[in-house]
Amino acid sequence: MSQKVFIISGAGSGIGKATALMLGQLGAKVGLLDVRKPTDVAAQIEAGGGQAKAIECDVRSSKEVDQAVKAIVDEYGPIDGAANLAGIMTSNTVGTDEGSLLRTDDEEWDRIITINLNGVKNCLRAELRHANQRGCSIVNAGSVAGQIGSPYNAAYGASKAAIISLTVSVAQEVGRKGIRVNAIAPGIIATPMTDGMNDETKAKWSERNALGRPGNPEEVAKMIWFLLSDESSFCTGTGEDSAA
Image 1 (cartoon, one colour):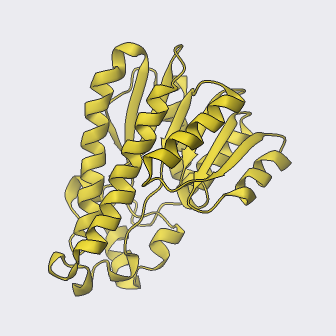
Image 2: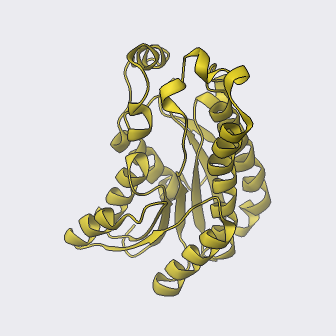
């Protein structure tokens, strides 16, 4: 990973932050995108001797994403890899009647779909335009909710299912160009996004995986590292679960 160029969206917290810090520790040049400029994450990477560029970016805007990606490429060079991890859900209503489709208004539905799905699309498209011709690996944030459904959280589940499908489709478009595209599909992970869930919902989601507990961001970051690295050179178009 040393001296390779990576872009992480959603780098300010959770899985994105853990991934950015791991890549920085491995000597990568890391572009950090988040709706709030992730200067603290960049500072941590630089304090450890790494290189990082933090940019405030709303992934809903293709213009902002294009400008942010170009700024990173102009400073560091072509992209060797990226992890598109920005996303949201209405965590305080998950698993409750308030989170049902009947109670989800169009504004909230569109907000989740636009950030989660369109955000990945915007990042992915910009990254493909600047991918290193020697090879590039891109990882998108799916979810187990996109594989098995997510009752009382339908907008989130639908967005993640679409991301997994987008990943498989684009992987087939760009594979012959030396570009790999994969998705991760973790279950419940202890991040700021899931902090708002009630205890009953957290317990139900934890019980659904074989380990019977939430994962932590660093565990998922290791999976992302594997997919970004040459260790997964024959892996593309997949949706990798972090726990069965």
